[in-house]
Figure 1 (cartoon, rainbow, N blue to C red):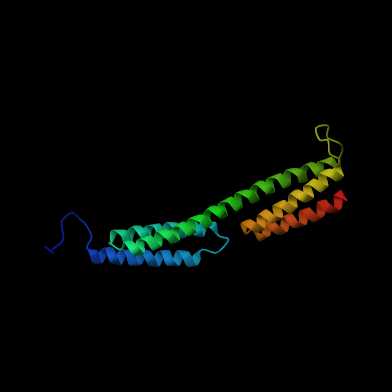
Figure 2: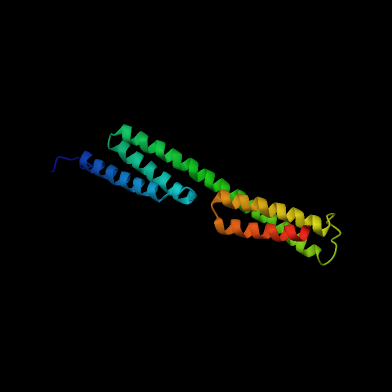
Length: 159
């Protein structure tokens, strides 16, 4: 026998090697996480939690705590990103609904809508301006440009 228990448990050297590999994976995940990429932060948090577990298993509580702390920061950034994405989706939905109403109003009054077409265009312009800001917060430059253009168009029609 090689001196290890037959229960399948790993040696301390193997645990340390696993912990070092987990640290490398966590470091790579952290480097891959950009400021606006909440999915990458979510993956980095998971990698750091795995590294924390591996270091705890290897008996290195200090390194485990450090990885748990970094995982918490990545989790917070991922949560912020998810909220920004949701805000952007909600603002987009509201802006598009108002846009549709404003465009429909050009073809005649809607008995369920008390606002005039210019008022609807002004409201749609404000909604697209809000959606523009929300898209910027979520890091979606394409959507931000789209909403800025729609806000300008509705502003001209509502004047």
